[in-house]
Image (cartoon, rainbow, N blue to C red):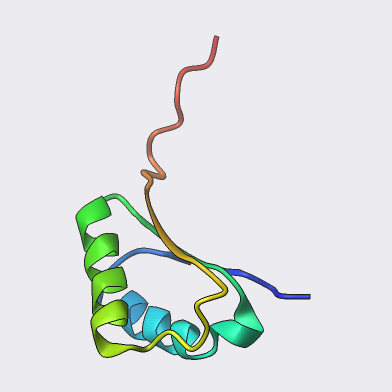
Length: 75
């Protein structure tokens, strides 16, 4: 069973972690990169694709925009 990975943040460390995860995605499964800035997440994914870092095309790499400080409305 694949574990799947969620990387929170899209800075330098997240960039390296995402590339390493992509190189082993046949073991790890799907990868999600989430940060306040969606564009930063997408740039990491583009870099992975350009460098051909992804080992298996069977699993996805997806970007999401999140803000831990946005607790949403509570009614």
